[in-house]
Image (tube, rainbow, N blue to C red; front, side, top):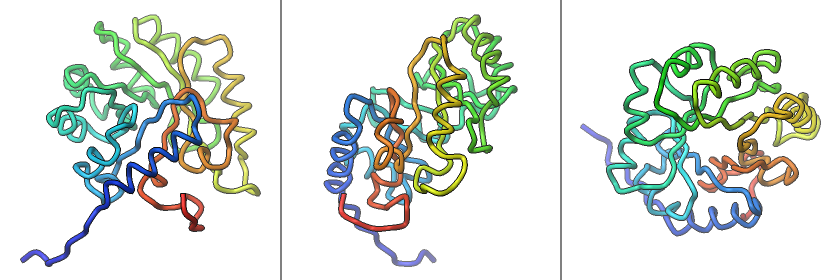
Length: 223
């Protein structure tokens, strides 16, 4: 038996938070990150409240498929990319942008003749996903030679702290030096960077938790 629990989501508040991000992000476009069922708010609520976003960032193809089925025609980003080579046809059919963060994904996509929009992820210090600088440029050139539309991404480890390493400044230096001379758009800022590091936004920002009314620092204030 299901527990009789009801959550009422204020979609207008989601829209307010998105407008606040747009004020902070300036000319940067917005990937609204809606992983984990939009942080427990549901994709349905996110689609209503965040309808003015430039794109949604999701974790898997099921979420992308659902958004397309509801009539979403703007961009969708697969944040962790493809989990298996067999996912490529669905990603193409759903017109998804794809994050590439490991060698297997490069190998799969290098063989793909259909051009895809790729955000290649640099491990600039988070040490979770992405290519280290010495491997990044090789991966970029392999995918670019295969005809894919190449863009650049990294993730800040400590944008919500001022006293932890690696700092945002150190990661920015690593990022800019690694992609020097390479074409493509950039995506850097998570919620904390949008709030506190306006010089580290990139062409696309990726707010998630702040859109859903939660402070990335654990400290609370109206946004």
